[in-house]
Image 1: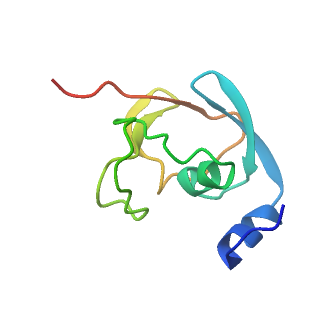
Image 2: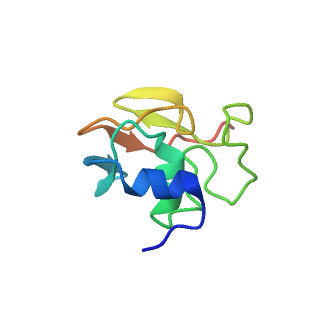
Amino acid sequence: MTHPTPYYRRLAATPEIEIVLDGTSLRVPADAPVLPSLMALGIEAWSGRNRQAQPLCLMGACFQCTAVVDGRPGQRLCRTPARQGMSIGSEQADG
């Protein structure tokens, strides 16, 4: 697959690891931020806290991409590097 931007081309050239997203195993580039890696796989609407499509800042300011990572809630997927075997699950919305 040809990626449209240099960032995605660089991700495509990085060795892959396996992560688990809501029980589904996925192969993503090692050490790349999780959210852009998911977007490169075509998983664009996934947001750990609010699964409705919300604008994502991709720099850690909006907190729309928080999820439970390896049992720790509130982790921002745009700032969290992918690690072999990491488990990512959705958080429950407040209220």
